[in-house]
Length: 78
Ligand SMILES: [Zn+2]
Image (cartoon, rainbow, N blue to C red):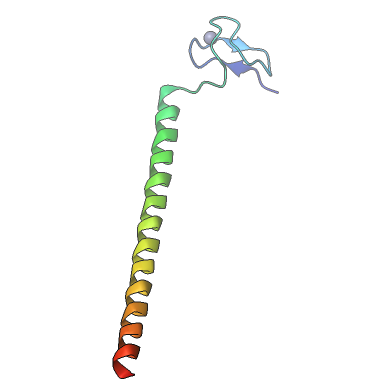
């Protein structure tokens, strides 16, 4: 296992360390850049799911309109 480099102060820590021996920051803390990237990915995923909800809602509305039209036509014919 490679040693763990602290993102905050750059100190090398023994493999498996959870906290930096020099500055006591959590070693799984990422740099600001990768946090921003992760946030952008989360926003993109959220936007994609919102788009899917919109597509599903539009599809459901279309099906509902078709059903209503079919029922109305059936009433008119009878
Ligand atoms: Zn550190």
